Length: 216
Image (cartoon, rainbow, N blue to C red; front, side, top):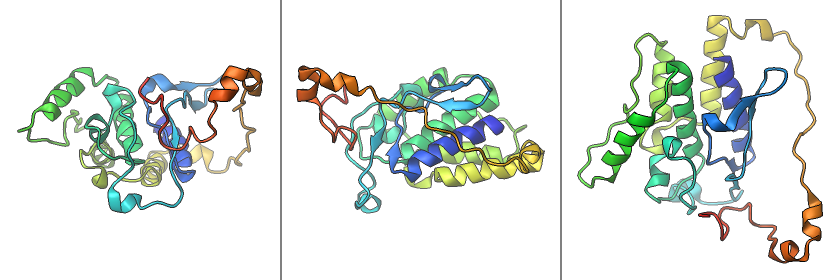
């Protein structure tokens, strides 16, 4: 629960800044020297426009990128999408944490079903263990819902995990620990722009939605 809550907090922070990750998976999650969870490899992340009619159109036109095992149905179908795709990917990660398993075979079956035009889709494609707390069962189902409108926000996911952590005593020892401000570890190697070839091809807007090389 503590690990899942930390991951959800990182994704919630990105979403609060209007950034969609697009590649949340166990392979992009690790632990630092102090044992704290870190979310890394933001190569597919994109900044969404601040002012938009996303709620009306249901998302943005972006490339079909990510990792198949964690890719939301709307991305796989090349439809418009937004922040909800990260919630879906997080749901798969949460399921892996809880089940100590991988969804490879389940996801392959789901992908085949989605590609069938006469498919009757179901949200419960991942086996949910009845031994998990009811809130966790509902959370996994909600995050991996086929309809992005039915998925909770990452703020709601993080809040749910935090409450569960309190109820189980996981977070109790952390309540009185003061929050530490950490310096950013993100660094940009600006010396690369000294190369005339790279400078001529540099586009300051490549982080906004799409760029020419998204599919590469």
